[in-house]
Structures are given as C-alpha cells and as structure tokens.
Length: 115
Image 1 (tube, rainbow, N blue to C red):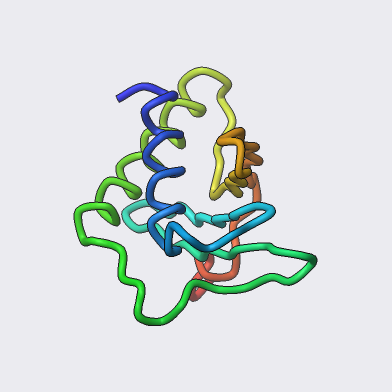
Image 2 (image 1 turned 60 degrees about the horizontal axis):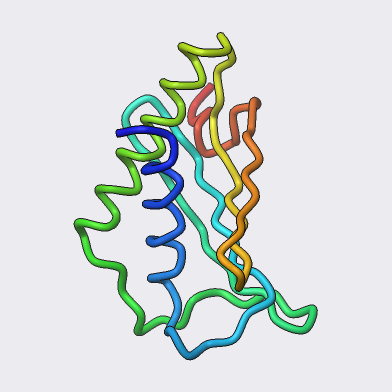
C-alpha cells in the first residue's frame, strides 16, 4: 500500500456510508487510531446541516477492514517518515473529489481508556 491508495480507500469507505444520490457540500470522516483498533464516525454536510449516515446504510465488512489497514498504514508511514505519532485523522471529501486530511497528535478519550 502507498499513501495515495490509503487516501483512496478512506474516500471510498466514507462515500459508502451514504447513498450515491444524496447531495452534499462535503463528507467527513473522523478516524481514531489505536494500537490494534480503529473507530470512525462519518457525516454529510449540506446547506449548513451536519447529518449522520442513514441507519439502513451498512458498509461492507471488507470495506471496514480495508479502512483499518489504510489508517494503520498512514500512522506507521508518518511515524517512519516524520517521527510524529498520530492518533487519528479527519478526512474531508468534496463533491469535486478533492479532499483535505488533518492529523490528530493527541490521544482521544476513547484511546486513553482506563488511563
């Protein structure tokens, strides 16, 4: 896997949370990356409203596994290339297929667990 492939997987999994005919100003996924697990939340933004995926829209298991692989790849790749440890990222996808990615360098409460 390379960085471009990882970004492509994240974009495809994010898009899979919503129906193709749903209009959006942007789609957003927040990923938390732990040592052996990931957690994600997705939203659709339209006209100033922030909307979660509809409940009957399921992402295939393989897509979820691929998402975790992509997240771990990005975490490990950044650690190797910059020496920085990330604990998550926010991936924003726009209707023209452009995207923005912001990395999180602080552990979330979910990752801190019983600390």
